[in-house]
Image (spheres, rainbow, N blue to C red):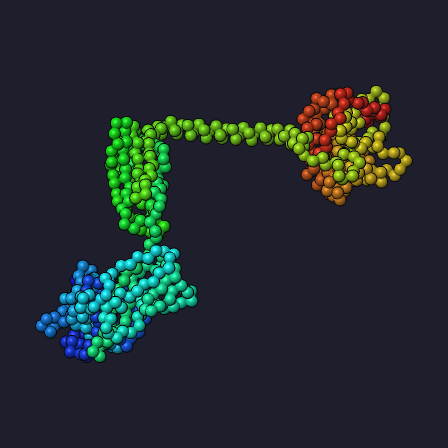
Length: 571
């Protein structure tokens, strides 16, 4: 308030020391003459008639320090009108509001501005009753329009002073002149009425209609204000409880402070008061504990909440039902909350901890199980689900077997393990039990041809190459040739993959090319543990089958066939 008085005194001081004073303004001729009907809202702005009328008022607070209003007193002096929302009239922005205007408000008002264009405006207001103004109908301040329906708004002031000459009406909405726009073709003017072909929510607002009337050669501005409210038709549905849901259970502790929220959605109702209520129901009684009236005014209805604060939960509360009741003129809806003693935190923590440990142990155990039996799982999948790789590549052999063949024999010497593995165990297990077709040089390559060409041709007809590495392999020229041929074929044909079978220690000879040395380091390697029985080394056969192509075999025989070993011996 002190700041306002300081601004006011400084403003008056500047006015008094300028070219014109409030007293001078009172002596000036009247700039604007208004006629108003009593008991209606009314507004005047600090503008001359010659100034732009596309806007008749502005409520911005920025104008309040630039405009000062005075009213001529009974002794001919001027009384300042202070900004007070409870007073009537009261300055607001660049205008002076009357709510409502009465006959005693008739008189001269001075509006002083800081600018040099129009430092003061002399305004005369004459307030008359409806009878004096010859109003033919009962004027109203508020009108209600239904959304999405067509209607028209008439200027109430046109029903007054019908015996005087009148100009066309100008319409303003919230202080700004209403004009026809292409984006709103449904808005039109017809016989001084504002026509709305379809009412929208944005049509809410304060409408002002102005027109000029002439009385004995003097022009008066007639102004009427209407408050337009856009509404929808009253709902035909009862409210809907959003929270709590029916049968809701809330875990609490004895002595705990809790808030129970009753939240409901209400449809629009114009004049009916709806309500939200909380009830406590026991086996013996039902008691109203909280109530609140609500007034849904939104076009699509409104959502309201009522919170009941339960200061301290007791044993009695655990045996009660708390009922949220929402009702309007159509009906009601309910939601129920049942309080339940909260599970002990320590027990809950232990249950969560045990569950977490079990899940972790199960995950680790499952991971270890999968890791340990990965090959078995892959073989199981290949046997029953995977597609047979040997059906569409037109190759003759599943695997070419390369081993160090003895160059000479000695009497009373046992056959070497490489030869036994290649010529006896592999056919016995891979061919007979699992249906693979092996390429053995002694059996499948006819003698008499060029050895190198025959080996390379057999490699190209094979899907895999099984290289049996032993101490004799590095000394055998034919075996080393077969190794290099397998590597070269694999580089040219991506479907052909060499497999290394480690029997005993293998020392790489210096004569190997760099690409063969590199291949020996990265190719898959399966180790054979020396055994006289072909079926004893089960893990070896699983790993070897893991690297062989997928092939479905449904014709395994009950007996294992024998493959005669030649009469050659290891040296």
